Length: 77
Image 1 (cartoon, rainbow, N blue to C red):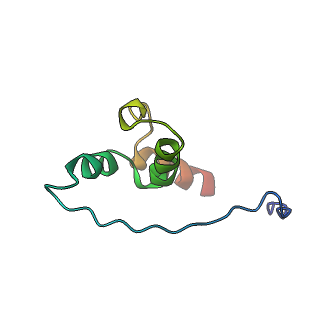
Image 2 (image 1 turned 30 degrees about the vertical axis):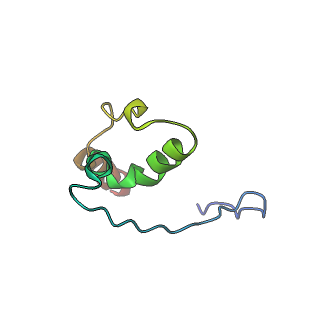
């Protein structure tokens, strides 16, 4: 079943950002991004930009990428 179309109030605004992080100058940010699974980077950046702090992010209880891939494979048959 297809997802119903979004109305104008529900449509997201997409903003693309590209960062260049240099070892030695941006080590803390490099460590932050390396600790986040690719699929959660945007949500993590939004949380930090909304007033959160890097140390407050809890990523310990997330399923591994392999577990998510296996779940998708099981779902698709």
